Image (cartoon, rainbow, N blue to C red; front, side, top):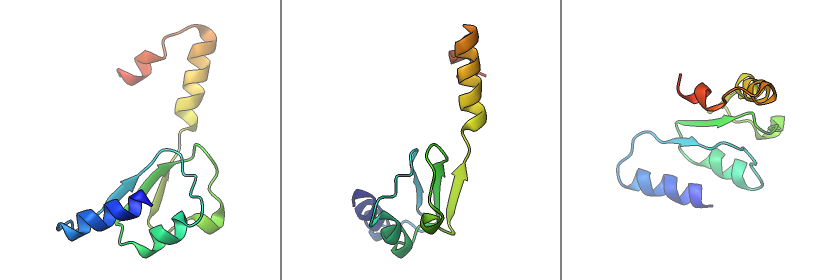
Length: 88
């Protein structure tokens, strides 16, 4: 995959640490195995979709979006500004 190529490229060009981030962790095969094999410092993603236990990696940080999405739904339902959430 493209992420594997990107990690290899930045490592080849001298990067000591590589951080990978993505919003929706689909992690279709063979993505998880590729991530395991790469020298990635940290993978940061969200809980927007469930991650099967077998695909969790020790260097993976999962950020929760539940409170933000809940507030967006509430504000939308009440006719309040959603944009204000991102200006605070």
